[in-house]
Length: 337
Image (cartoon, rainbow, N blue to C red; front, side):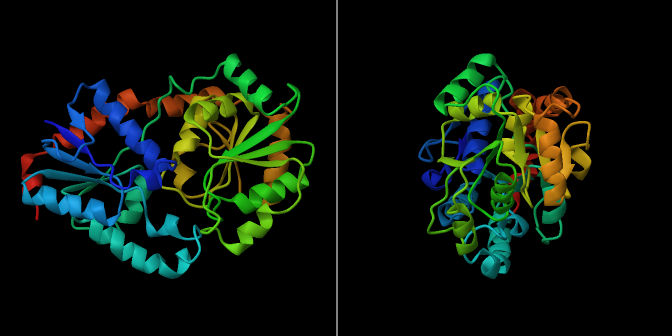
């Protein structure tokens, strides 16, 4: 068995969670010594698709013509497409039709969580849908003092300064507007939002919010994987204000780094993340503000060990075994048209 990790248009998504998911899949295959390639001109038995671009659709058609098995990883739903880029709400229904068409080109569909599976189950897909986490490299994101020091030195932060971070695109769905407002209301803490989005795609509302003069609010842009690990280790709280997710790889990274986590209380995290056990949760800004202060001032119980246990359950080594099981599903899946 040889797997083609098709990475068409990788440059467009390399800095996103999907780009990270592809790297995790490659590492999972390496753990199990499964032959794999990212060169579609090489021989292969299974093609693993992660994007819904036209070239991926063409790749699925080509693989089917050659009698290969097509595994489609469903990272996107209409629900998490809304409130993202300019015009996303307007074209969301068309986006749903497009991804449904793409996903149906696979022999089977994998999606990161039971929550995203429950959404896809309402789409009338004609292929079986399985849930499997994107996974996390817990060893890489392990907390250490050297990483903390590098982060603090780079951003010239006193060791006593309280730092709140978040990671993601400049999207309303990601909660960046609330992040900005909380920075404004909590001037004694430093707020850092890591990530980048072309401002041509950012709605005017978010642009205006980002242009405000807030001294304790910082947008360093996209940083490397190593720098992001340092940021987790060097900060006092990971604030995840997203309104909708299919999983949230950066959340797994924060849990693996044993940083306190405060998330928005949304359906995807109802069953998986237990409030006041693994993470803290809130819905409205006043409660976020109150909980941020309690957490960073060490007035709230430390939940990081329990949070780490959840991340460890999704370690790439463990996920790789489950991925292999999906690859080895009955050969009759290959004959699905």
